[in-house]
Length: 633
Ligand code: ATP
Image (cartoon, rainbow, N blue to C red; front, side, top):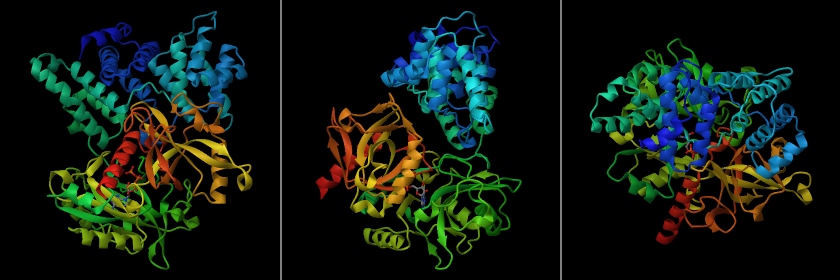
């Protein structure tokens, strides 16, 4: 760690040992991070700050991390901040004595409500000095705001926010407070960086570390983030990890934090491919297996030691209330010795009369919350394809062939209710092609091809792995995969579409720059009913001005802008370089972005948040893959 930057942030990282960490210290660190673009320096700033917290007030470490991540609890607890723009505008207005109209005007000019709050705070004179904000006081009030619901909740939230705002002593505090409440901190601090800094700060404060040689110190610092990242993908909860880190250090973490039923694991993801030849090239020399790729929604089913069953979505949301029928099925399909487990499955709509899979669209008509079993009209069948944990033992490190055997040993299929993913150990183009055709006939999306033996066949939580390849039926006509894009604007409709939005502006996500980059205008693939639904939903998310983190060209300006609030799955004929769209700008061409040709709407992806959208890196890769493919043909 280059000490220059560390001492720079440590300059403002001072408070008395044992006292709560001042919020202003965190805000100064945020300010330094926001101004910096180099990831390593950002990491150093954060490591320096966290090291100080561990040294002076370790009991605030967990809350400090949550504020850095702009969260208030583990992702799987489904509790989000995301206070609406309207209420924040009102809070700024009322606590600074300005009016809402002028605040909205400033917001249009600055594109960021946080900066408006900062400017309003700076121009405001205070007659008395309020009690300074601390990390615990801010965190606890944010949690109160997020959990306030029911009658008069808006008024109560407004009161809490005004209280926080008037206790800000600097413009920076007001800025980061407002951004955090919006759920959009956006200072360029990725979760991976937080994990690295946390691991390194813990190591730096470990008394044993000081006794090591120079080279041993370096290797300890380099290894610690890998251990923490691996543990976090198995147990994605800082609530659980942080106390263990403080007690046992990074090295002791593996022993004390393990995959546990009841805590969802970040699922392993697959890599898209465009042809069977590409699959065979990648897998040469490996044993592999092909499975049907079912078209439903991913379900991670857990059974705890006490018999409780839970089901989590791809995004770790607890879907147990949505699928009471699944919870009910599970006891019927267990073999006698199966007690606790975690399995990876696809939940698919099922036609009980004709005994076949129904299209995804049917599944998406199911209610999301408070589903009563007697009201269910769309039956589902579970297609299990992996097992991660069985009877007290984690199976993540076992080869896939062994995991599959464990799955077969633990469950008893039941027609139309629970099945194992259909598979075949095909080895050549013809066999794979035949199996692909068969999958399509059975209403599947194509195939998943997985390495089945050896060290590359372990389960890799949260990774988009090249050891799992997806081969979709549309691969010959498209770009190998559909894209999941965020709708950020709309063009008003004409003719039949008057009073509705007629077309939309879509964007991909660039996690490095934390921005949405425009990729195309889309007006195809919508039925009248779908257009109406989009209008109803998106109307509530219209905003006054584009966000500062939208990267767009004014030639594509839509009539209305939206908050990033919904992800759409889209198919395209191909990708091309564009003078006006910004996806992956600077990657395939120094100044131009990539855009979609003939995009077509497929469906809303409720299981993805805007930040889970297709990334600019994936777009650049697809564009490159398409060019290589064209050159080969
Ligand atoms: P990604 O998760 O890769 O970002 P996505 O959510 O759009 O993309 P797909 O591209 O459809 O998903 O591919 C992966 C998904 O396929 C898995 O998340 C899972 O829900 C589904 N799936 C269906 N059958 C299988 C199978 N046999 N093995 C693994 N996944 C399967």
